[in-house]
Length: 155
Image 1: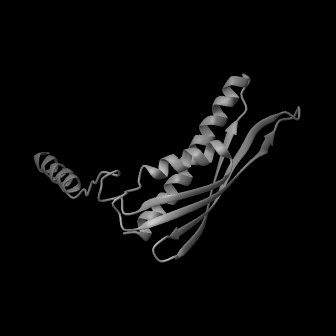
Image 2: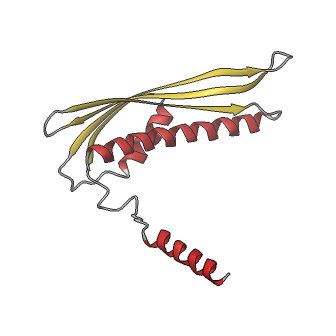
Image 3: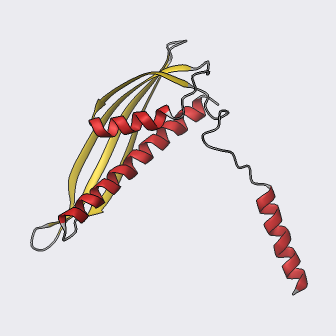
């Protein structure tokens, strides 16, 4: 019993000591500066995406970039019940992103998409709440994908 407790203790110590935790918003992670932002599409969503990406921009970075985003939002019926009433919607975001390095005029083109299904509730306000949660989830996924691409390219 004592040997197994000691073994478990050492395993826990091993896993926690090898953790390479780093702050996500540290100055070391900010290796690019977004000088220009050009967005088309859904105004609310593009504004949120722009603000979230700007938080990871570093004015002192040598990598000056321009980001062009064309965002398309689509809402379609996913499921209906026997009475032909909609019970679920499929919400999708498609972001065509072009990253242009201003120093060398290199271009990186990527498309990011995300889908989310949300339920229609008996109360309209609950349905609207589900729609907003799904929309925010899609925006977060798109932003994380764009930031991951930028971190990979500028690391």
